[in-house]
Amino acid sequence: MRSINDLTSIQHIERLLNEFSEQAQHIDEQNRRQSKKVTEQWFSLSLFHTRSSIAGDYVEETKRLLAQLLAAKREESQRFLAEKLSAQIEALATALRSGKLPEQTEEQRETRASHYQQLHEKLVTYRDYERRLTENLTQAQSTGSQEAVQVAQKRLNRCQMAIVQLERQIQHHDEG
Image 1 (cartoon, rainbow, N blue to C red):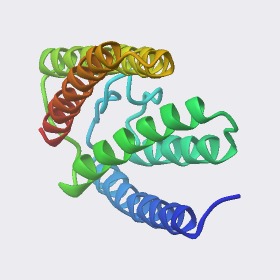
Image 2 (spheres, rainbow, N blue to C red):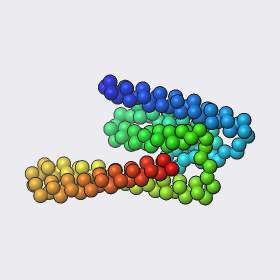
Image 3 (tube, one colour):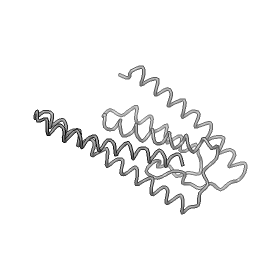
Image 4 (cartoon, rainbow, N blue to C red):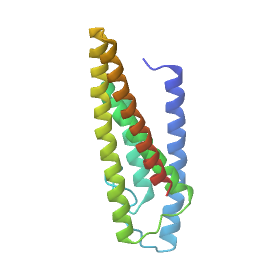
């Protein structure tokens, strides 16, 4: 059963996505009127599966991801989908805020997409490390050895600090 905070957050996300839909529709209309040839790759393949020159298609993918998250039963799946949803919302907010598609050469876009994909792959790896280190800490706590607990806690803390730093890099990358 979802709490009131969860429902409020879901409603907030749905409002954001509706705003994004309106902004995307406006951008798509502008591009049609100006007969602009828009590149089909706005975002990294690791962030969006969609390959389209229509802004609304990316918003629709994010709406589908929200529906997947709401239907997910396993906590691990929920966390993964929530992280991806958050990344998509941030990327859409940045892209749609300007009111137009980012204009980059194909080479710049590919380089940025590759770097961005590497950052996300690294984040997935670090999250896996974090999960295993959390399990190690739990095992150390069950043994009662203070030294083992401290070692496990230090490793987990270093891993979590690396995750925070990587998330900052991704956020910086999203902001352009």
